[in-house]
Amino acid sequence: MLQTKLSCSSNSPRHATNKTLMFLKLSTSCYKRNSHVPQTLHVMLQTKLSCSSKSPRHATNETLMFLKLSTSCYKRNSHVPQTLHVTLQTKLSCSLNSQRHATNETLMFLKLSTSCYKRNSHVPQSLHVMLQTKLSCSSNSPRHATNETLMFLKLSTSCYKLNSHVPKTLHVMLQTKLSCSSKSPRHATNETLMFLKLSTSCYKRNSHVPQSLHVMLQTKLSCSSNSLRHATNETLMFLKLSTSCYKLNSHVSQTLHVMLQTKLSCSSNSLRHATNETLMFLKLSSSCYKRNSHVPQTFPFMLQTKLSCSSKSLRHATNETLMFLKVSTSCYKRKSHVPQTLHVMLQTKLSCSSNSPRHATN
Image 1 (cartoon, one colour):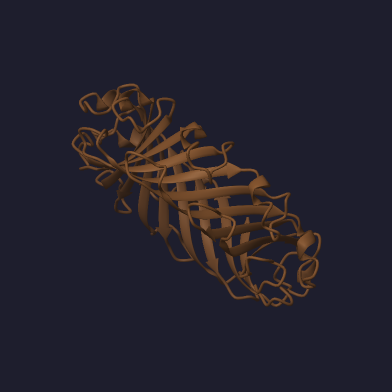
Image 2 (cartoon, helix red, strand yellow):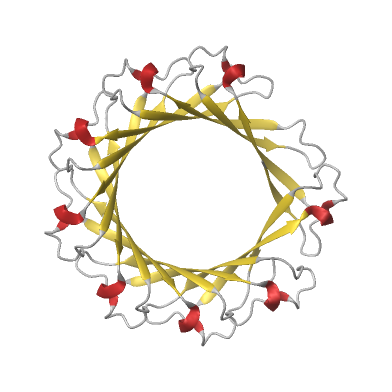
């Protein structure tokens, strides 16, 4: 899979320079000489190639190897339960001639039940726990690694009933970053990120928020390891709505599918008086771009517009637009190093006025 970043002029993308990212999938047969790598691994090499515009053959590479293995080789670590499903994500820094002597920085993903957390009274026993452990280890063995653990906790809101500002129907996802020793994660400190999904019934007092929104609250809780009840929160609200409330904006086509990503800074008691910074995602056809001769008329367009607006109204916002263009490579035939069967994705950032995106620079 070649992911090519093209730097091109606004008149033609044919003379672009390129930076290529090549994804390689291979078996572990070429890793048999590395004794610290189990032979049963499924290996995915993600190689970033820095190459000239003429040929990618002499590229240097920085390799990211994804390793999926069982935990049998971790039995010597008493703090790792033996029932874990482990995937090692190892970044290899190696020469382009051989990957055998690479150094590695390993990220181990651990999925386990909460039976080993029963000694932590603040963790409900019905949690589904996902430990994401970053292991810093030598190239010979990952057994003596230090770890920084990120624990994902999914639980019901029954333990949040003492917080009046949290609706009782929320589905809560706690993302807890545990800083712990390599021997035991039991005495870890935690920084918790709580994901709240709720209906907009509690937002009816905000006249600028349509009532048909699907709201996703992403609340970062800073709390002690004993209790999450007295945490402060910084809330990110995701709003999905139709474009009916944008009909007063003549530059926004009425057929857009709009996704508002609003970051609310609010107190722990109420979200109603929050300020917001809004990111609106606009998906539209290219009919309104017909006056730009350098933009083919058959492109599917994706406009990613960041709106800076007041909390009362989104109608007078300024915007910074990012247009995604997907084209075939027929216009690249003059570059011999680009295969003719590639599907090319141009990511063009348009700076335009709030009235019309037709005269944008790119």
